[in-house]
Amino acid sequence: MVLADGTLWQPDDPHVPAEPGLPVLFPLLDDAGPNELLDKVRYNIPATAENSKNERFIRFAFYGLFLIKKYLCDPMGQKKLVRFEAIKSFSNVLQSPENIKGLWHEYFKNDHPITLELACGKGEYSVNLGRQHKDRNYVGVDIKGNRIFIGAKTALAENLTNVAFLRAQIGQLTNYFAPNEAQEIWILFPDPFLREPKAKNRLTHPRFISLYQQILPPNARIHLKTDSKELFDFTLETINEHECIIHECIADVYGQGKATGALAIKTFYEQMHLAEGRTIYYVSFSLPQKPIVYVRKKKVNIDADEE
Ligand SMILES: C[S@@+](CC[C@H](N)C(=O)[O-])C[C@H]1O[C@@H](n2cnc3c(N)ncnc32)[C@H](O)[C@@H]1O
Image (tube, rainbow, N blue to C red):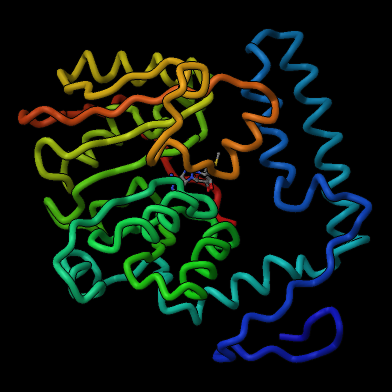
C-alpha cells in the first residue's frame, strides 16, 4: 500500500505505519465520524414528523461535510485502509473465522473463563479488564474493523495475550461460540434503535438474548451500560417478560456514585455522552434456565453496516 507520504507499507511489517495526517479542517469528523454524529442527532430527538424533517436536513449537512472531507482532504480514505490492512496481520484479530467455534481455549492456550464485549467499538472494556484480570480472557466483538484496530493495537503493544477481537456480526455469534463457551457478556452503549421498526436490532431484544443463551451457561451475567433511557426501559421489560434475574440495576451510575470497579471504565461513546451531561444507566442480569424462544414474525435484517 502506498501511504500519503509516498512510502510503501507491507502487511507483514510488524510496525503499524503512522496514520495519514488528519485534516485540521474537520476534526469532528475524525474518530467521531458522520455516523456517530448522526447517532447523536437521531437518539436525542424524539420521533415526530417535524423532527424527522430536521433530521433529514442535518443528515444531509453531515454527509456533505463528510464527502468534502473524504474527497478533498483524505482522497483515499487512507486512515481506514491502513487500519484494515493492519488488522489482517494482527494475531489478536479474527475476521469472520471459520474454525474457531469450540476452540477459543486453544486459541488463548488456557482454560480461563471468557468474557465477551459486544459492539465493542474500540474495545475499552476488553483492554482494561484484560489488564486487570489476567485469569480471564476477553473477546471484543464488532463489525467495524477500523474501530477494533484501536483496541487490538493497544492489546498487542501491551502484550495482553488474554485479549482478542472478533470482527463479525453479533447476530451470528452462535457460528463462533459453542454452548457454554463464553461466561459473561458486556454490552456498552449499543445503538438504541429508537424507532419501532428497528427495535429488533437492539442488542437486548429477545432475538439476541436467545442467541446469548445458546453460548452462555445458566447464571452467566450480562451487563448493559447505556445512555438511552428508552433502551434501558426496553431491556428491563425484556428481563421481566423472560423471567431473567436482575443482579444490579442503577438508574444513574454517576449520580449515585456507582462508577467504581468495572463501571469506572469509560468507553469512547460514554465519554461523548458524559461530555453532554447525559445520565448513564446500568443493569446486570442472568438468563433463566428455560429456553428463550424468539418467534420471528417476518424477515429481519440484524446485520450492522460493515466499515
Ligand atoms: C454506538 S457504538 C458503541 C461502541 C462502544 N461500545 C463504545 O461504547 O464506544 C455501537 C457499535 O456497535 C457495533 N454494532 C452494532 N450492531 C452490530 C452488529 N449487529 N454486529 C456487530 N457490531 C455491531 C457498531 O459497529 C459500533 O461500533
